[in-house]
Each structure stands twice: as structure tokens, then as C-alpha cells.
Image (cartoon, rainbow, N blue to C red; front, side):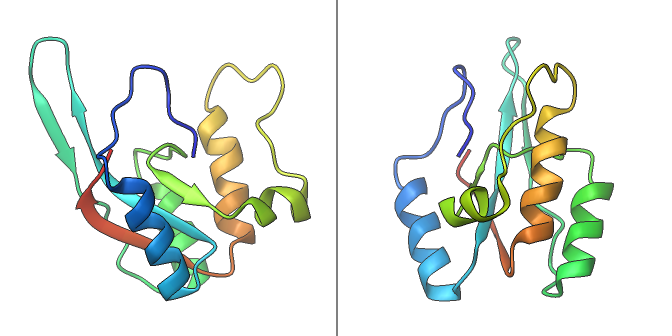
Length: 117
């Protein structure tokens, strides 16, 4: 997980993501999310990924407007096996840079259409 300092997660998010990863034998679990703006406006985003094949999931992720790594959980083995980490000095689209590689190397990605983040 890669939460920012001003982020909020639901109390049961980690438990549910871990249980889903175990049950589905997934390398990466991604949940839906909400943005709460300073003016009180709330926007909820339900992930559009309803595919199971890896290529379609990766293409959907890259085409979606919120290519983030927060709000998801990936197996540590993905980072270790493929040497994945955030790029040093990246100040723009760092989530996309790491996220695409996580999605690419994951054997199975599961999305949860419940807002946890």
C-alpha cells in the first residue's frame, strides 16, 4: 500500500484486501475510492475493471483517469522478484510508473467495487 499522509482508509480495508487476495489467489487487489474536497464535495469512483484477463486489465488500468497505486495492495513478492520501487526523482506520475509495472507483473489482479479508500 502507498497511502499519502492526508488519506483515509476504512478500518476493515486491510483485512478485506488480504482476505480477498488469499481467497482469489491474487497478486494485486485494488478497491474503489472517494475524493473529499476541502469545500466538502465528495466524488465516489467505482473501478471500471470488470475483466479477468491480464491484458484487458492492464489496458483498462492504463486508460483510466486515476492510475494510482494508493487504494490497492500488492504482494511484497512482486516488488522483490522484479525489483519494483518508486523511481527516484520522479515528481510527476510516479504512481503510474510503478502501477503499470505492478499490474504487468501480477499474475492475477482482483478489483473490489466497494469504497475502502
